[in-house]
Image 1: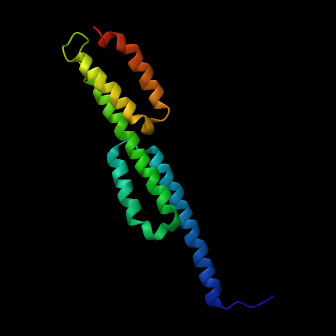
Image 2: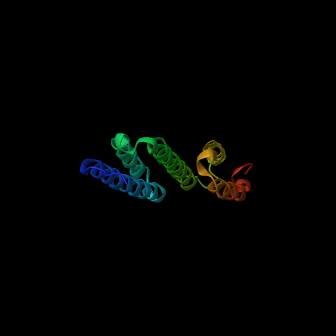
Image 3: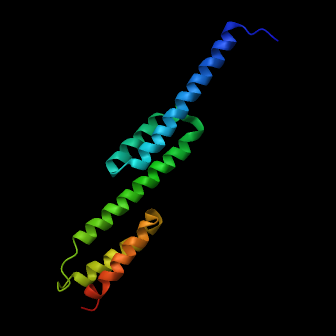
Length: 134
């Protein structure tokens, strides 16, 4: 069995410890992205990932993509929820126009919403007779 000098063993140990720390940080970061509830949180996460770019190497693109997707999703949800809450009553002169704008926004946000798209679509389908042609 070959004898390793102290510096070789120390370097290997340091690399192993750093790798474990990086993996733990990356796993924890992924969880933080998934649990982010506001666009402010995703903006802060985006800045954090930019600051860690050199330390995380190959994981940068993956983590940045997750943050950006989460940000777009939260932004789309907030926009649609606001439009739903701001809809005037069905008898209002602007009701049909605002409902149509809401449908268009929902369709544009579809790639960011995933499974929520169908839930919103069902809600709007139920509301449509009230707003269109009234």
